[in-house]
Image 1 (cartoon, one colour):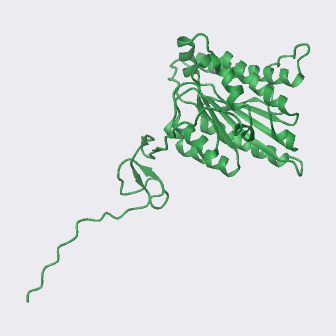
Image 2 (cartoon, one colour; image 1 turned 60 degrees about the vertical axis):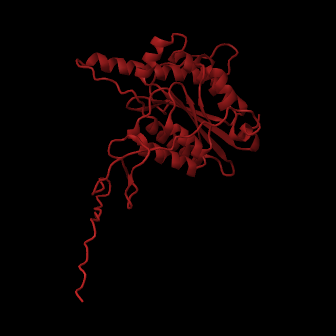
Image 3 (cartoon, helix red, strand yellow; image 1 turned 90 degrees about the vertical axis):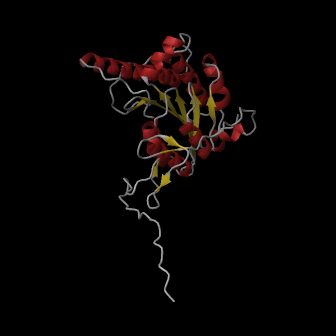
Length: 302
C-alpha cells in the first residue's frame, strides 16, 4: 500500500471522535453490542495500522464534545493525566502509548461530565449535537504547526477523519464551512464516517476536499469499514473498489434561524443568507432600497 512515508515524507492522520454523551447514551440503550468502548477499540486498531504503514507517520485524536474539543492523543507537554497503560509483552511501545492515552483521556472527560452533573442541583439538558466545527479548527491549527516544524525538504500530507453519530447543528454552519474551505486551501482531505443519520454538512465537506463519505450500514462491522475505506491514503484509493459517492445535499443554513433552506435571500454585500426578506442585513447592517410600484405619468394635453 503506497503511503507518503515511502516518498520521503510523512502522513498525518487526525481522527475527530464524536463523544456526545446524549447520543452514546441512546445508542447504548438501543444497541448493547455497540458502545463507545467498542468504537474506541476500532479507532485504536486504525490508528496503530496507520502508524505501522511508515515510521514517519503521525497521529492525533481529538474528542468533539458537547461544548469543547479535547486532545485524546497526543498529550499536551507537561499536562498531568492518568497513568497510561503499559505495553504488553511483545507490543510495540508506541501502540501501547496510543491505547493508554486514548482511554485515560476519555475516562477523564467522562469523569469531568459526571462531576459537573453531581455539583448541579438543576441539571440542564445536554445538547444533542457536538462541537465538530471547533474540533476541525483545532485539528487544522495542529496540522499547520506540524507542517512548520517539518525539516526542510520533507513534505507532510494531512487527512481529517470525522467519526460522527450526533445530529448536525445548523448554528455551526459558518464556522464549519470556514474550516472546510481552509482545508481545501491547505490541501487537507476530510473523510467522514457516519454512525447514525446522514450529515449534509459533512457531505459538502467531503465533496469539496475530495474525501470519502460513508454511512456505516452495520455498526458491528465498523472496524472492517475503517480499515477498508479510511486507512488507505488518497493516492491508493483510486486503485480500489470503494463504495460509490453519496448524493450531496448542498443546502445552506440561513443566518436568522440557522435552518437549512432550499430558496432564500442573499445579501449583495456580505453574502449572508436569509430565509425571509429583511430590509436591513443583520450581519453588515446594509440597508436595501425597496422598489415600489412605478408612478403613472400623466399624458400631456395636446
